Image (cartoon, rainbow, N blue to C red):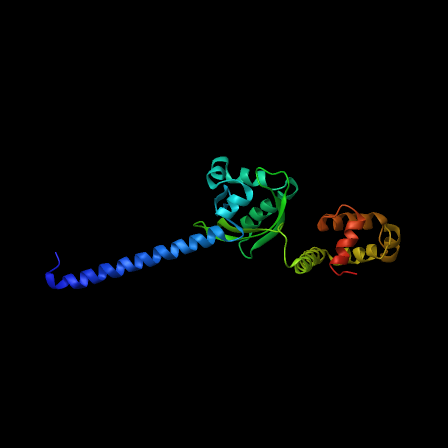
Length: 236
């Protein structure tokens, strides 16, 4: 039991602790308000379970409360809100962090409110948030911004999207082998398989095989798309 002469110091210490507690409470309230009111969907996604936490903006923009998300399962929730053609975006994000935990992962995708039929465009980023005991990424911190509201910088947005597409296509083209780049350049110049085979002294079968490999690597379905991608990448 403290002696009477120590009471002043004890009361002082208690007061200091109370002030620190009040400061921490105020700070937590402020940060919580920022997280829930920031104009972006913020959520934590487990690589196996899917979404396990989200902010209030996410609930309001997509119509599902955190309780509803957890009840249906975070993976099922993602498949419900994301456009079927864009399911590859969250899947690619998971695959990215299962094999690599370096740079952030980003992408464009469509998602919709549970009570609406029309999809909205979002641009999202994710980065490693927590890791397991083996150093493998376990959870992601994700931020998605709704691009559908009227913007004051539409010209800048178009420029950014064009530049982003150019960089992506440049990376795809850079993944081609030297011979494939050579053949792709000739295709862009309007040369057919026979003309390319004669120019490079290759069989038409070999050139045709190269063309199929090029389309597969670039992810294009026809010659027009392949040429467009190559030009956007600055190949010709």
